Length: 111
Image (tube, rainbow, N blue to C red):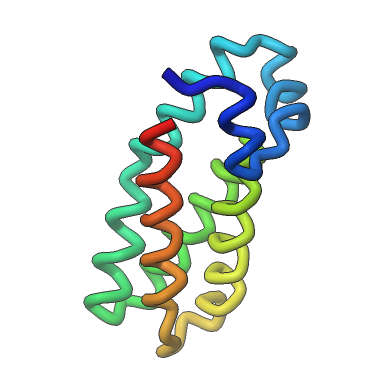
């Protein structure tokens, strides 16, 4: 089971995330688990593979919001960078960043 100390070691700003959850640790950890199940991770990868940059932007933007609200900072930073690169909705190679985001998601799932 995830705990706050492991999330801090991961690089999450848990104090910020917890403050958004009124200090309720169980609720915060539940939201982290829900965020990891967000279908926008798959949507981002498939949209990039299909060169659908509008859908990829939407997925990155949604993930940016979720990850930012939970202060999952390493993942948020990647989603934010991808969001800005995809904002023009034109061809851009974000596959390495998307893969890094998925790798971080997998790492966080094992905590």
